[in-house]
Length: 254
Image 1 (cartoon, rainbow, N blue to C red):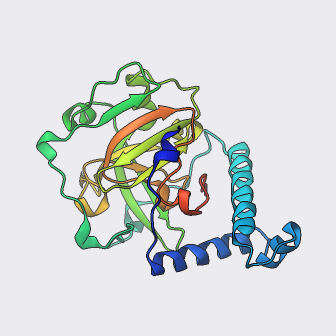
Image 2 (cartoon, rainbow, N blue to C red; image 1 turned 90 degrees about the horizontal axis):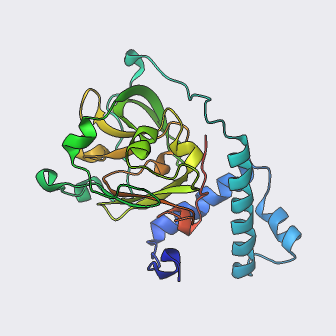
Image 3 (cartoon, one colour; image 1 turned 120 degrees about the vertical axis):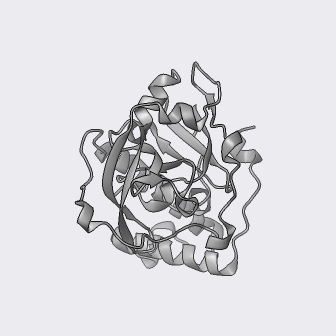
């Protein structure tokens, strides 16, 4: 039995379910395919929930493949000047700001597992000693807003090389200390702008934005940028994600 099949089903609150339906609708419209067209293609109506879900999932998987084919591992996302940084930068999570997790920083360890040679946990001090890259890039939220921020951290490619990861594997997964989880394709993991961010705005990453460690990828939508990362693993089985398992497009490239 796969890890995904053992995962408990997440129950959405009414507002979250409404938001997800609206997002799915916008994604369909942007791709030029309406719900009416979906029903015509499948021979079902909107009361045939299981059949509609199957079609939507099939479309999403096809979208993932197309985005993967189009993705360039060397094409860089746009960068910005310091005077273009958004102030204040917007908080965003699947929970309210007062529920930001408290992390025991002195005892923090980043767990490493899966298709890697070195599975020893990492301290923050060890991560800080690795080569760092800085970027001023735009975070784009699927809800329709965006914000420009300054991030600094370890290129994920550098970290994966240090732990002896199988760079031909398909996926890199993330488990977070706020109970979030997500995953990305290996090509995105190796992109030069994909970093494990330790700093924001020239200071250590604050709690609201994912301390002590978050994923920062200007080539992906905001919800793919996992915060409060506690574990990283490399695998050939798609690990899904918190929102992805509920209908968001898994690839979610920009």
